[in-house]
Length: 219
Image 1: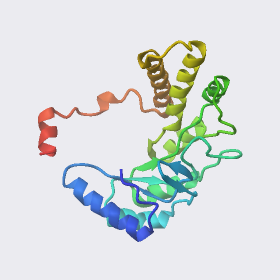
Image 2 (image 1 turned 90 degrees about the vertical axis):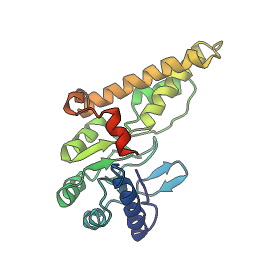
Image 3 (image 1 turned 60 degrees about the vertical axis):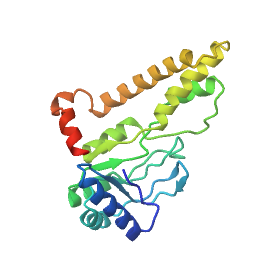
Image 4 (image 1 turned 30 degrees about the horizontal axis):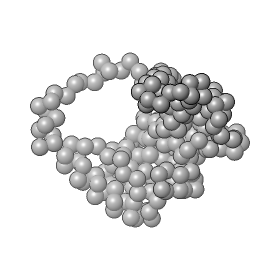
């Protein structure tokens, strides 16, 4: 994954192309990003700038990228919308049709209400947190999104579990006591997501790579 979308377009092309050339020589696929998501990711903040379908054609042709993360109105973090969530779904169809490249949707966390309420119940503060409803993500998948990026939901599952443990059992200080349930809560959330998005039950669809072949690729 190389995200140079916070640079100018030509610099994004140059950086992405160089990464693709290096990675492809070593049998590694590359995902890049075009357009800008809102919110903050690590130390980079952005304002939503929807991806231009025509620019996608030029970008994919010049870089040789294998997958493209597009901006259709989502944002990083737990505060994606201030009113009813809306996404530019038609862009997915248009970009997919014009490029033929697998598309990726970043900033796709739902920010589940039950997790938000759990965090608030046990001392957290997440006013007006709102994400992308699961049905909208499922629709995006049906239109051509092939990979979904989720982070905030996973963090919320862990945080809610730990806050509950600290409140109900204040004597606990061993990380093993509270991280175990937190990992379990995270796993249960991700299983729900995989089932909802149709990604579960496909292990048999793929051929396993032997350790010997893997070593050849990375020699």
